[in-house]
Image (cartoon, rainbow, N blue to C red; front, side):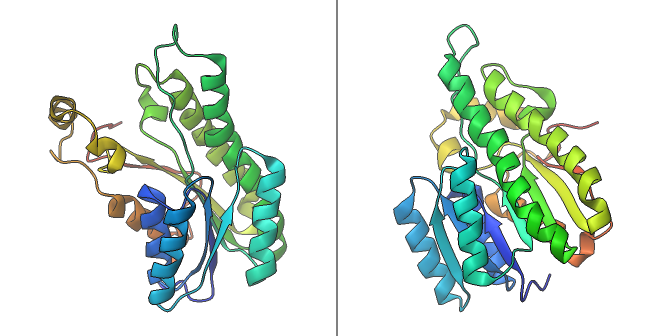
Length: 248
């Protein structure tokens, strides 16, 4: 899993799953560009942590729903490091509600960040990857995008869209030696899930064959595999990291 000399961009990379991914990539030698939107303090602390590991980290604020801001993010990465080898489209938001109560703005914001943001970043980064004839793109989707979830018509639609984006992009970029895959996390233990009532968590656990919540490092480890040489013959795939919650 040696990523020495590689440059990785991680969107939404300052906290939660994104933070674990950023740290894992850095620990294995990659120079990391951590994108954040509003979590500046977390981004700065992560940058300090990565520097303590003896590696380089650039933090860049950008709303990835904006193509213009994504362009500034990518140009900052290229200006600082000279190239980009890995893109992890991790940034995402939720605005859950039943469809009868969900506003149009709730729908648009989730689609703009979760789906269009990944499209924006993939469009811009692929320009450089195609020229160097190599690259790895990993999209963080969700099991909600595979089976749906009540109260998440916007989120599930955005994550299902990422699946289609992954497969289409994999076909477009394969001849340039660029691998594009997706990871579909299940119920992962984060600050967000930590706020859920115990009875809600227990109900989820009943449906997880491994009988435990996932950890952020479970996702980060899968990212490491997909951006390493061990996965060079894998593209267009969606890997479920969910303890067996969704099968088939």
